[in-house]
Amino acid sequence: MIRAVVFDLDGVLRHFDPSHVGEIEARHGLASGSIHSAAFEETLLSAVTRGALTRAEWMLRVGAVLGSPDAAQEWAAHPSEPDESMLALNDELRASGIRTAVLTNGTDTIRTELHELGIASRVDIVFNSAEIGFVKPDVRIFQHVLDALALQPDEVFFTDDSRSKLAGAVSLGIPTHHFVGIDGLRLALHAAGVLQYATPRAPLVGGVRRSDRTP
Image (cartoon, rainbow, N blue to C red; front, top):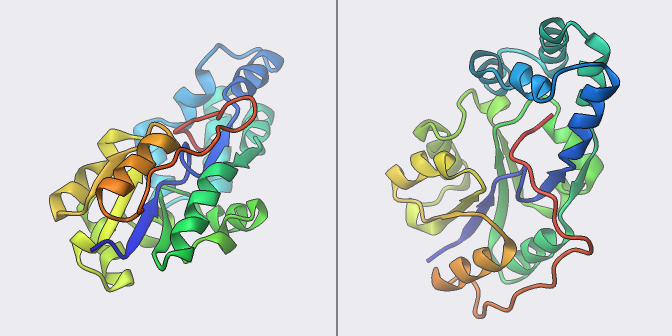
């Protein structure tokens, strides 16, 4: 029986406007894709999401790689928006007695960001890789979640918009869902016996903007 639903953050509960990055690059005379290339270089991203670097230190290094500290700082301030339809689903789950949580490969500022977006108060617990020291899909971060929730693998449902991030959960026997939209998630929750029905919610006006990249 599922007792907790754990959501990935970026691309699931909050979204970034992908056009914003291109606008920053154009303003600073940078090649298209250069910000993401610098910021999400594997070694650097691993360090900041494991807590070995602060977000501020990360941006200093990104600025140095780009040769434009101002562009890096502007990108760091890139605003995000909560997905209200997903938060409504979260509220529905909690009202039915299901605990909800966020599990994100994040930086040291995640708790502040979630507080400012109003997401922190909507979920029962936030799991941040920068605090835990392991990142998805490492099985150890999922074991940390199970231990903190005091639940067995078959009692937790996890969804992420990056299929590769599900691997550690799958290896532990945690039911998972590759998130591509709220309707599919509702159907998956219904199939897992979490929701008693699978009525799709109306989409956000203008559509949902999705990104699996965290600035």
